[in-house]
Image 1 (cartoon, one colour):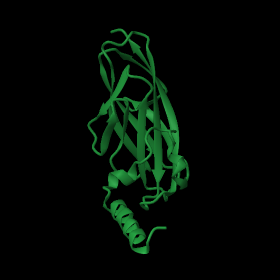
Image 2 (cartoon, helix red, strand yellow):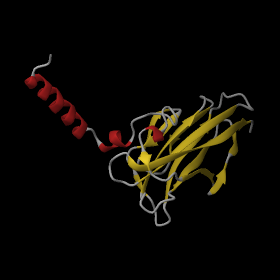
Image 3 (spheres, rainbow, N blue to C red):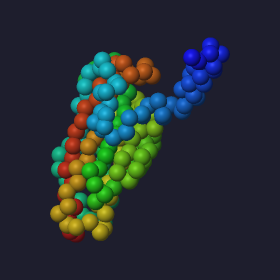
Image 4 (cartoon, rainbow, N blue to C red):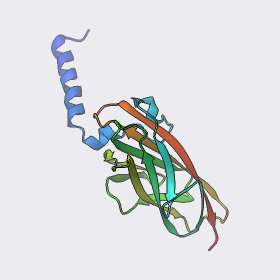
Length: 179
């Protein structure tokens, strides 16, 4: 059996570690969309509308010349007035298309095939939070290679916990073309 002093010491250590974690760690904990998806932990909210945008237009497929970099946006639109902030995660299905940081702030690269937010983002007056990033079709990729981006958008109440939040998954099919 564990003595009371030792148990109290372990509990104090765990609580202290959790309190000292930076906010970005608490804002992102589970990795790629659906692995597990955000809804494994976040519960009780209304699912947002989530879409990929290219040149401010919603897209479900995109042709990208190999060797080129293209800006994209993952738009998270809240469908509940009490969910005032958003988060995101985007992954690429293969190394033919890599992900990179865009002009926006508050995003980080987990790997060349995954990126996410560093902290939640407040929605604008229309309940929208946009996360802008870049994709690059690698120069050595065979023309016609297809990669799928999986974008998970989370709409949250901003209470700092997991309640009052829900996510939606969307996909974007990218075909690498020859210039």
